[in-house]
Image 1 (cartoon, one colour):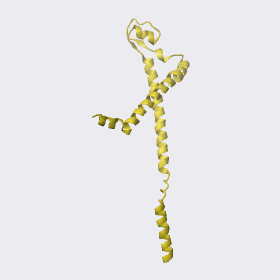
Image 2 (cartoon, rainbow, N blue to C red):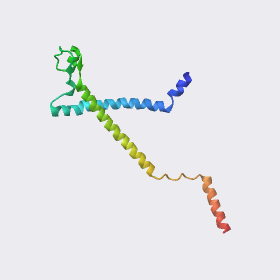
Image 3 (cartoon, helix red, strand yellow):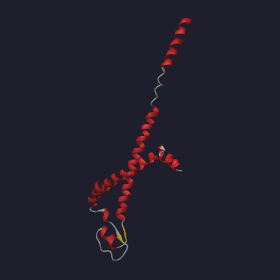
Image 4 (cartoon, rainbow, N blue to C red):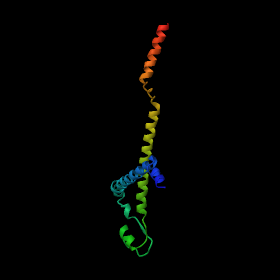
Length: 139
């Protein structure tokens, strides 16, 4: 059973998947920072709002003005966070669309370019020359 697991774990697809997950996690952090630190402040400045503190208190006793304080006081519906996550998703989806579109364009270009004939081996070249010489002598 250990040998089977080792074969499975060291199979190329599993390693590729693991690398993809790690890169995806790092990419997610980059997009989170892009949205939270760059895009949302501009959107907030345009409307004078900060989406991260938009919430609705589900308990009647919530008097806090920030989301962190409100969560300490009781249950809240943090729709501002949802807006941020939705913007994250749209950005990630758009970037992945551009990546897939770029890869498809590269693949189409590779298919359009004719492949150069493989170089002939030395013995094939030599036999071709001998054949051509024999044809010249018999004519």
